[in-house]
Image 1: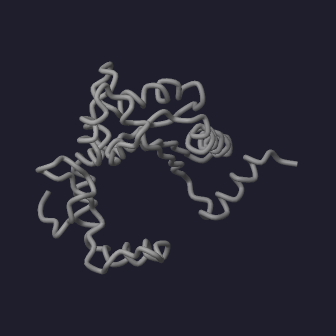
Image 2: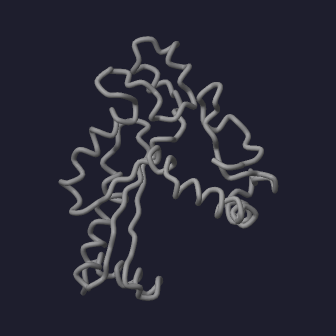
Length: 198
C-alpha cells in the first residue's frame, strides 16, 4: 500500500490535470511565537509533497509567504511584552513590520518573532522559498496586479468571497485593498474609495 503522501500526490496530479510544474504554497503571520503545528501544514507537508513530485519528474516549487503586513492586534499577551503596555496600545492595527520589537533586539516585531521559526526552516524543508509580504507589495508586479487584475475583476472577487461570508458580505462598492493610512499608520481602518496610479 502506498504511503499517504504518495496518495496525496496522486490526488493533486489528478485534480490539476498532470501539469509539468506545481507551486506548493503555505503562509503564516508573525504575530507572535509560532507553534509546532505550523510546521506540519505550512512546511513539512508541502516539502514532502514537493519531494514526491520531483521524484516523479515534475517541477515543484515550495513557497512560504510570511505575512508581515498583517495588522497587529495588540492583545493582552502581546501588550504585556512591552515595558509600558499602555503606551504599546498605540501600535494596534499597525502592520507587524512597523511595530517595535518589545525586547529591542530586532528592527521590529515581525523580525523578532520570525527568527525563532524561520532560522530553523532548513531543518524541516529541503528547498523552501520565503516571501515577505512587505517586500511583495512594493514590487511593480504587485502594483500592476492590483490595478490591472484585482480592480478589473472586483465584482467577481466580491461574489467569490461573499459565497463564504454569509453573515458579513462585502457591499458591491467594496474595493479589495486595505491601504496603510498615511495619517495614523494603521492598516484596515481606512476605507478605500478609489485606486489611481500607484
